[in-house]
Image (cartoon, rainbow, N blue to C red; front, side):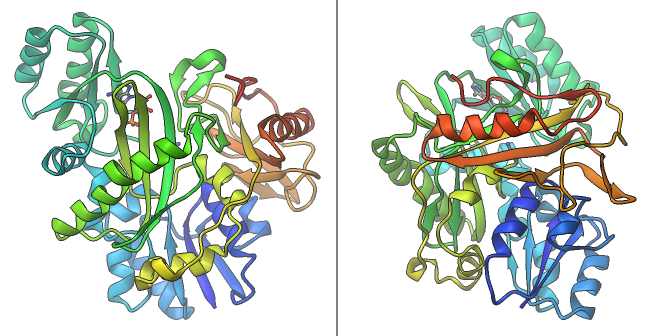
Length: 420
Ligand code: AMP
Ligand code: GLY
């Protein structure tokens, strides 16, 4: 089998390393990939959004199966384009990827089908949004750009002034471009946040082991929101009872709701959950694997990933094993100093072997390139140092021990992943 993985981050690296365990697969391409991924797959210099280029590549190289990982190509119809060309994919069609691409859509879906989430209103006019916030007068209030915004389109305002500024920033200053043509104004929820990724073939949903992201740039959840600075799996807060409730009130109802709307979802559906005092509620949906959640979830998967991905496409997930290991996994992100704002690239990374790895851990490359046999930094999030252990403390100990040895100029990481 020849498999093409579309994307270029640590998440894609984790998917590829897991796919490599399947002996049926003899070639894995990654477009565009990165320096570290090139040790595990053949990187192809075609951008993840280049539908035409990727479909031609897949046809010319007789690709048997395509894994579309990032949100943008999914929302732009990469799966539709590949499948029209006869290449089966893991990843939803554009009409289902909208569950992430439009927060207004996902909120309306949850309201219509009674899926628990924060109370909200949607506005396409800034004055009306502001008037509603002033009238409601409840703070904090959450203001969200409707569309994709690299995880940055969510503003939490603690008072009236900052709420007005949030609406202005999104709708009038167009800080997130056309993604802010509409806003969702939402009630602020409190509780522990948990990520649950789930495999689904459009009928059956099989949740993966839970995980917990650390979104803020600095220790103690301070600093700016990032794509994620580290993850642990499983989440200690996600009990079997909560999992059962989520299955009944959120996971299966969401898959069924998408079907009822004629938007059957096949692939990885990501549930961002808040465990509120009134029970679990949806914070957000993503139409794809999370990053860096995938880096801690897939190492815990005992079953074969490729078999599961094909079953999601074929509609045979009910008959496919999805089993998880005991123990725990932790991932610490090494980022470029300055991320998520301005940062420099091109610094040499020391401590890695020729395959970009380090003994005792798995190093997922997020933003690296290879030049003259050396690994250089090439992005905001650079590496995800990942370890499994019999429990969370062992996994964290192993990951942090390796972090000491894998370094580059101005490197920044959080020292409190999984410590809370
Ligand atoms: P999202 O991109 O929708 O996941 O939002 C980013 C982050 O903002 C989430 O991970 C939460 O920490 C926070 N957030 C979003 N919506 C709410 C809400 N209604 N109440 C409290 N926190 C929220
Ligand atoms: N780590 C959060 C996400 O992938 O959206």
